[in-house]
Amino acid sequence: MKRWKPLGMAGALLALGALQAQAAEPVKFWGVHAGANTLDEMRARVDFGAGTPLTGTADLERGLHGGLMMGRQGEHWRYELEYETGRFKVEHLRLGQVSQTADARGRYHALFANGYRTDRLTQSLDSFVGGGIGWGRIKLPRLGLGANCDCFGPASKSGFVWQLRAGLGYRVSPQASLTLQYTWLSLPRPEAGGPPAIRYERERFGALSLGYARQF
Image (cartoon, rainbow, N blue to C red; front, side, top):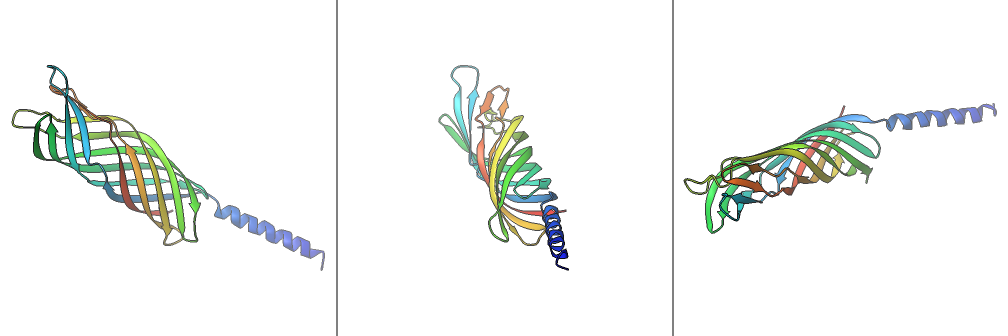
């Protein structure tokens, strides 16, 4: 009977290893998040073709920001494809010594491939940090200054985008988590051919959002 003890222990260790390997297998997930961006100003160079371009500023009200994602995750990593979108409201325009209130809305869209490092902090709390690259578009409507000057638009641009992100996930069940995350996002530089020709500065801004993720 004693000869069977080592065999029994070996069998138990093999079974434990199989269970650990099964638990560590990557899983698929989907997620959604929504919150607000910190985009509060856009600066532009406005060229009327008759001398030095003027510097203009559009003051913004922070708007909605959100996204949808789907991907795979393992014990210490996660990667995903994400569609991200946001809005902002233009409240005030300034060009040289002229200024006036405004009421218009802009929007941005982007598709990202993201990768993260993940770690378990407690039994129910996880952290993630990483970033992504992709392709996006930002669009502003006509932003006229006075009755006869389309001094700020319409303007738009598509191009390369990137983002950095860090956050926490709280597991409400073995398959589902609530998340809180902060994103630092870089968008293309909007422009319009004119006249007048308009070239905005490249926008980099943050966004804070709450989310929900579920394995399947």
